[in-house]
Amino acid sequence: MAAYMPSYPLYKQAEEKFLSRGYTREEARGSYYLWHLSPTFPFYAKGNTSVYIDAIYADLAKLLARIEGIEPSKKGARPNDRFEAFKFKSVQQKTGRVVYESWKFDFSSEQGCNAFMDICEAYDKGGVEYASVALAAVVAKADPKTQRTQVTKARVGQLDFRKNLVQLWKTCAVTGCAVQKMLKASHMKPWADSNPVEKLDPFNGLLLTPNLDALFDAGLISFDEDGRIIFSSKLSAADFLSLGVMPDMKLRKMNAAHTPYLDIIARMYSIHD
Image 1 (cartoon, rainbow, N blue to C red):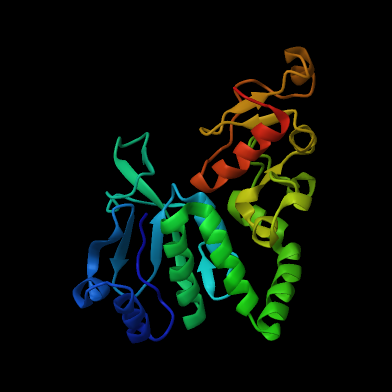
Image 2: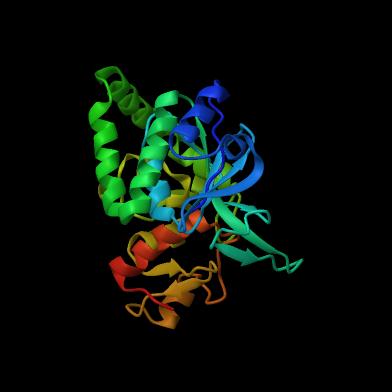
C-alpha cells in the first residue's frame, strides 16, 4: 500500500507518530521518500501536506473516509506520475504518459491522524476485515459530542449531494445537457444500502437526464470501467433507441472513484458488457 504525510496543524506531532510506528526520522521528514512498514505497505511522504494511498485500495479508502478528523479529497482518485510504487495506473490517451492514481487524505485533528494509521496498519495485517474491526474500535471511542457532529454533518451533506454532483459534472454525465432543472441526481449504490459516507459521495452518483436516470435507477443501463454504456438484456436494442439511448453513449469522464460503485450496479442487476 502507499501514502503521504498529514497536514493537521502540528507537524511535529505527526512526525512523532510516524517515528513511534517504526519510521526513521529522515523518512518521517522526507520529501518524496518511499518507505515500508511491510513489503505490501509503503507510505509515500511529501513534507507536511497530505497523505496519499494507492487507488487500488478503494475498500480501505471508503473506511478511512468515515472517520472524524480524516478529510478525503472531494475530487476522487488523483493522478501523479511520481507514485511509481502504486499498483493502480493508467495511460493518458493524448500523451501516452503513464500516471499512477491515489486517494488523497488530509487531517483536521490529531485523533484523525491516529485513526488513519491504526486502520491502515490493521488493513496491512488482515485486509478489509481487520480494518473494519479497527474502524469499529475508533467509532466506539468517539465521544457523544463527536458523534453528534457526525450526524449533523450527514444531515447537512444530504442537502449538498445534488450540489456536489452539479459541481462535479456541471451538465448531464452522458449527454452534456446543461438544463440543470431537468437533471436528476442518481445514486449508483442504493441509498438504503450505503453507509453515511457513500450516501454523500458525489462519485456514488451521476447527474443524468430523466430518461437515462430512470433506466439507470431501474438497473437497465450501467457503464463499464471506461465509461461506455452497457445495456441490460431485459430491453431490446429497439427499446433503447425509442428512448433516445444510443449504443455509443458513454460517461464524459471517468474517475477510479466511480469504479467500485459501478461494480456494485453490475452485480446487483447482472449487467455486463
